[in-house]
Image: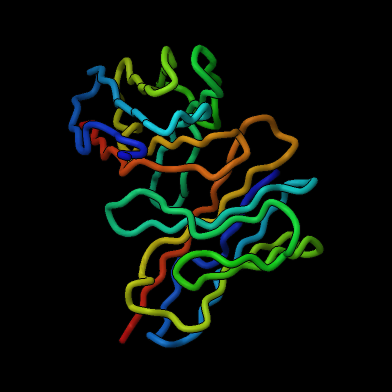
Amino acid sequence: AQSVTQPDIHITVSEGASLELRCNYSYGATPYLFWYVQSPGQGLQLLLKYFSGDTLVQGIKGFEAEFKRSQSSFNLRKPSVHWSDAAEYFCAVDPSNTGNQFYFGTGTSLTVIP
Amino acid sequence: NAGVTQTPKFQVLKTGQSMTLQCAQDMNHEYMSWYRQDPGMGLRLIHYSVGAGITDQGEVPNGYNVSRSTTEDFPLRLLSAAPSQTSVYFCASSQLRRDIQYFGAGTRLSVL
């Protein structure tokens, strides 16, 4: 079945440490890829997106993500995490060949310890 | 510029009651959608609209109705609420179908 997988339900990192959140998808063709962040009690905010071109994309708040077609992955990275990065992170996929649907992963909850 | 506005923020219903969740956007976006967010399941698409007068079902449409009479508004109706509809509901809009989506702050609904 087609899906968006975020294998890490919860991650804890120390402030200042590096971060990588994983996202894999199983849709064919070339999907549009997104990372959103949700702070407690808030809506979702776009961190970054990949539509085409350079496979390393930069986003807001110092985040970046790399699209790897061969691995069907779009992992999110940040070199040095800040306490304010504690939130829920969602990978999302807009396939090119499934009509008007838009699919989210189940999310990764990030805790940052001082 | 308010973006996407959802009302109410919180709602408690009894089983069998009906209600409408309101969603309005002021960005002149054509594409609007409703999602529900449940623990461990991410966001799932309920219904969406690609323009005024056009709506379609998403992944989990049962128990919900929508209409799109104007570009700005996209209400979600629960005709007979069930406890399984207890969730957080998000409305989103985008200029194009394959584009960045802008989300409202959400409506937290409890059905007793």
